[in-house]
Each structure stands twice: as C-alpha cells, then as structure tokens.
Length: 491
Image (cartoon, helix red, strand yellow):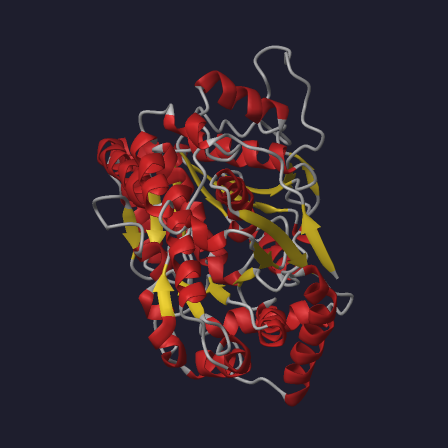
C-alpha cells in the first residue's frame, strides 16, 4: 500500500529570512541551489519512507517539501505500507542489526519476505513515477522497492540511511547482507556519519546530517506564557486560572503505581516549571537506554544525594525525572514499542517509593500532530536538562531540538550524538550509557551547576543555527541528487 501524503503550505523562505538568526542561512540556500535548479525541470523528486508520523524522518519531510516547491522543484511524499505486519518485525530486527544489536542471523524466509513485499510495493508505486523522475528513498523499509523501481524505469535514485554503527561486527555484517543486493543498485547513498558507510558503498556515498525546521510547531520559540498555556491545555500542569483556550483534544497520560495510565496531574501536579527537572523524550526503543537512565536516576536520589554537600543535596532532593514517549500503538513501523514500554512500566513499579514519586512516565497522544509537537516543544523548553542516553543513535534530533531552544543537554557518546555535541562545550556527555554510576554523576553535574550548563546551552544553540537547520540539509541533498542525475550508475 502506497499513501501519497499531502503537505499543507508552510512559511515561505522570505518569512524565514525576516528572522535575524536565519537571514544568512536562507541566502546561502538560494545561492547553492540556483545553479542546479534547471536540472530538475520537468521532473518530480519522490521522497519515500515508511511512516507519516513518529520519528525524525517523518518530521523533516514536510518542510523539505515546502522549500523544494518554493525553489521551483516539484516533490511528492509517498509512505509505504503493507498488510503483512511481519515485514515491520523484520525491518525492526534489521534496524537493530545495523546498530550492532541482536542475534546475527537472517534466514532465507526473511530474505524472501523482504523481496516479496518489495516487489508488491513496486507494482503499486511504479505507475505513479514518471520516466524523468528522481527517487530519494529513506531507510531500509522501502529500500528494496526503490531499487526495483530504479532498475525497471532506469531513473536516478538515491538512498538515504539514517541509522548505522561506528563498528564492523557480526550483527552489522548480517544486516548489510540483506540490504546490499538492493542498495547497491542506487546511484548514490547518503549517511549522517562517515562511520556508518559500508565498504560496498564507500565510492558513492555522501554525508548529510539531519536537520530541523526552526518555525515548526515543535521548534518555534514559545514565550513563558505560551509554555504554561500548552502544558496546561495538555493536562501536564494544573493551570493557575481558568484556561482561555480549550484543552487539547487528547490529554497526556501518566503511569500510576498500580500500572494504569491516568491524567498526568494524578496523584499530584508534576511541578515541571517549579523544580529541577530532567527529561528524556524518544521512541520506546531499548536502544534509547531508558532502563539504564532510570537506574542512574535511582543512584542519584540515593547514594549520590547522601554523599553530596548540603547545597547540592537540596537540588538533588527536588529533582524529578520525566520519561516521555509516544502512544506506542501509533508508531506502526515499530512493533517493539509496546513491549519496551511494558518493561519500563515494570521497572518503574519496582522503584523504591521515595524514587518513584519523583519519576513520571508519560505517554503523549499522537492523534493530532500539531498538539503533539507543541507539547514536545513546551516540555523541551521548560525542563532543566534534556537527556538522550542512547546506546545507539543514528543522529538524534531529540538532542538537536533542545539545543536549538537553548536548553542544556546531556547525551551519551553514541556516534550520532557525537556529530552534534562537543563535550564540555555544547553539552555534557555520558561516556558509557549502560553505566548507572556514570549516568548518576553526569545528572548531578547537569542539575547542580546551572551556570556551566547555561553557557554550554548557548554554544549549542549557535551550533544548530550554523549546521543543523533544514536549509543546509535541502541544499546538500539537492547537490547529491544533481550528481546522480549527471553521473547515473550503470547497472
């Protein structure tokens, strides 16, 4: 099943350029793309991935579409789907293998499943594509289909991979063995880190790092009044006065000690803006290091709190932890999400009572994407520090987003996060995301040394402005597509 996603009109490049922080970035985009725009006359760029919501790719594509349209380049966004749910179980295992995790084994049945679904999708997608069009395929799920369409129509195609591991291990080799017969047919490939490029693609790969849209609902500037309004309308705090605007269509829910989810202000207000608050917000994925973060927080509230001087102890005693993720059933291409959330819920219920009352596990509604994005924005803008304790991370826009907002970040040393954060300059780094002691010490430093954290947050905001905004990403992707048009791979 192929769904073509219609993207609403967003801000124009002139709108972005009115911001003093974005004027130069917009001018650089126009200058970089003007010479190559004629190459795309009469063509459509097909942007293809596996979900329209839940994940960085789905969030990046709408604004890319709008910018391409304003540059005079036609683009369409297609999302693949299938009734064969086992495909997404396979691609989830493949996702883990490319991160070096899981049993390094792909069966003949797995290979047959991937090939069969890819061919079924090709039959549906191919009639939509014109003979002069160009493909930009994202990640493993649609990679097989894209390769087959390219081969059949003889059109230029680029594959963009947002995941990988900075090491060659049995798991990664097995994962690449499934994909190689397909992705080897693409004219060029794009990765977010040089370390992720497999040897068979080393001669035709480019680096383009993911980026964010500074005017999106998730990343636009919110005033303190707007932050309080969003948190109140989402049910994350008890409003000081009756709300002027209506509550959101769905409210955030919070795990209770009995295992049920209830309104987030039950049994009491979270006091998000009135206390030191640490937060991780990500998919429910084991590779995000959730359980180790909880273990580190438990140590912070226990041994480290007892050993701290009186001033730091007061801060630690008041510090809370938010574990935030989407309604797992809403992310259709991640079948492990429900299982991971259940494991985390069990871990929460097993915490000592004095730690449990300072931990909140929150499930964000996904039905309304605008409301969801505003909730994430308000949370990232209001907490003391945003943590991303990933064991593996392809890039990690969940770190880029708070960096843009000037919120201090604490990240693991996963390869994707190392592309963004320079330790001690843009944020703090956990050297081993599976070491609770190291996590606890890093948390203590982040919440107990606010002036240092604020200085790094200012550096991080400038770094995003210079390197990780959508204008740079669009210009770089167009350069790669232009190269594929000029020098197509001979199959």
